[in-house]
Figure (cartoon, rainbow, N blue to C red):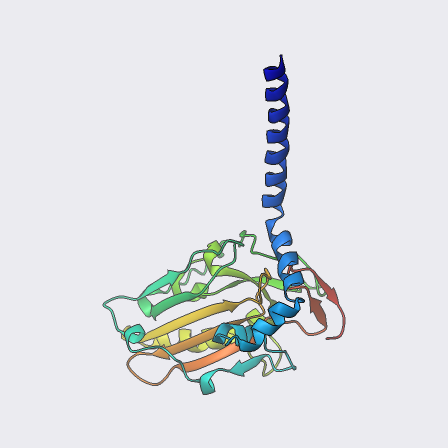
Length: 263
């Protein structure tokens, strides 16, 4: 009888533990974000940070937006190594795996006209259905295209035809992705420059890299680091950081929620 009661007691404990583990796993992002938030307030952590040499990604993540959407990195010159600029017989793209928070990481490619999808005038592109980390459907106006967020490709669709791929899509503002304001620059500005160059000749190759830049454990990137260099000439050479912001909107980068208000 005692063994039966003991076994019943342990079963209850086991059930409770399983439930707690399940709840913790389901809410792991929120829990870890709170832990990081608390740890950054610690005096010990702050002391360590004084002796910590920031990586380039950390430096970009900590940049403050001052109204300029695009800033040059390395004086706007690419920083690929000679090994990274090797020409292969065909173009390629390589996407990094998602991190444990489900966030896309750096995307690399050697772009060439042969990789580009054919134009299909009578067929609409497949609608994006991937739920990118931190994405919310938030309207900014009355028009059909007036949405705060896009699902932004790292390697643009026009380069390889890759569309509904979680490793290649981030939550990006309209201003980051395709800013339509006069003289404004966004990801599409640089993508168009590369695409126009590639279409000129089958012998044109561009080494291309796009890195989403996150601050700590936030789900929405603070911006993207874009870098490109043509291999056989100097026609393409840029290295820029584009802020993931939207004028007149306050974004909570931890979860993607946003409210309208002056920055």
